[in-house]
Length: 339
Length: 232
Image (cartoon, each protein chain N blue to C red):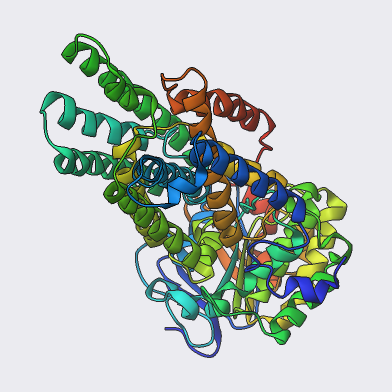
């Protein structure tokens, strides 16, 4: 045990504690597995991959690396949005998929792409607009106080999710003779093959959202104590909630227009991190969640491609298979009166 | 309105309380205790002016560090993240002065350890707050609020869920902490505490102020017998 004074100096700050090595070893192992699954299994001579112009080089840098970047960005984003929604909306079940934000993006983007036949950029814009509308609705709803308010927001979001998902399914089955692989991602989520430009966009979005939440770590700590206490501590919970939910949801919506809605990562990862890594403070929670979320989704993407090649198993089904039971478990063990 | 002699002055309802007082806000459930406290904190809108503390500031016009220096708040059911260690929970009282990035100074940490020790939380400092008793948790809330070093402390029924020994311990901690405060406003149903420690009683009935005065005058007015006998 280190001396208390040494440890507590940065309790609100200490990001990843060095004396908690084991979870991080695990993370490192996961990182190796992801790399192996995604990049190295080229079959041929590995050296060829690093000389430009060769087929392995193009496979690595124009197909696999961009896809890996999107998987990492999407997983990290979903995890930190879960972590921050849970604090800002004061509900342990809050995350973008459960609360319908992901479905709103998917519905809006699918409408633009499949029905209106719009191109990439217009689809992206429509999807982002849909996601922002849903996020704004949640914040408005969260601003209402009174008994049971925090319970209601989870139910409200779930209701929103049900409705939007059903409309999406209805539209797709009405408009299409058969649901092809490209359309499947709107329903179940999938990490797509993308070009370097999309990969950059995803990486920058995730990086910005992460930076915003890390800078606001102490504000999240304050809001976690409830709006009135946050107020007396000098933090305006309303303004923080609007700012952070909108900015981070914008980043998520952008990436979701590429991946479709991927369920439960935002629920599973922050709870897993709290339980296993035990971060001290919101800043550490956000950083650690990003790391684990990114690795988890990249790993799941590798698995999804290898279950039944050449068919790709939708990644959203894998994350839901893991996340659904976790959702029930969190619901069951939640102590009363403590968030 | 609002001068060196006042802890709190309001014009709707008309209330004027002398500086330095420990004020008990009493009344039946639904009489408006929480609403009044939240109005004084400035998180609930209401008619008229509020002047709090030595300088008579209206908390509704303040925000940020200015507000945090004027008033600390302990709500009826503090929302603690269950896995937060007690030491970190108390340390959140430093947030106003630390802002988003500043590191705590040696003095900040010493003060945190002082309140942890003073309220008998030393052995629990590394425990997650969800695993300690309700009484201990309320003392954590009190220590957190005191670490804020605000002039006035507002507490909303802090002993509501505590057993009698837990409540007694909490009140002892509050009375000890008084000397570092410019005034305390606490809503409570604990008649023994009011009789033993309150300087001033603000009795709410039917949405208005039924009585506001020193405890002795409250007893002369009819005390809890009269307050609780009146129809709602």
